[in-house]
Amino acid sequence: MATYIALAKFTDQGIRSIKETVSRSDAARETASRFGVRMESIRWTQGQYDLVIVCEAQDEAAISAYSLAIAAAGNVKFETLRAFSREEMGDILKKLP
Image 1 (tube, one colour):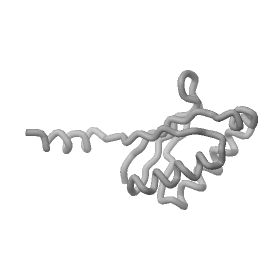
Image 2 (tube, rainbow, N blue to C red):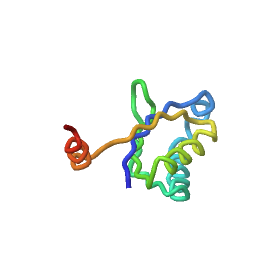
Image 3 (spheres, one colour):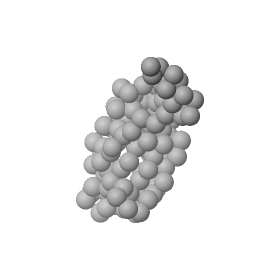
């Protein structure tokens, strides 16, 4: 499974219902499994992004479908990044000439 980092910002709707953010994260974790995604952790942050989420997914299609489903609820906007482990990065570097 591949690892992904999702950086999320609350929408206006998400801020208006901010008191529900913890329960929404529980629902998002449950939804993840329907898409073949495992949410490893979620952190509420200060700064440019409101949430940092670490997920594992079987492929890009799974994480994309999951991100779209969560974003469609209207509470957050996502930026998803593929993250590589030390071992994966080593394998990538071996392919360089």
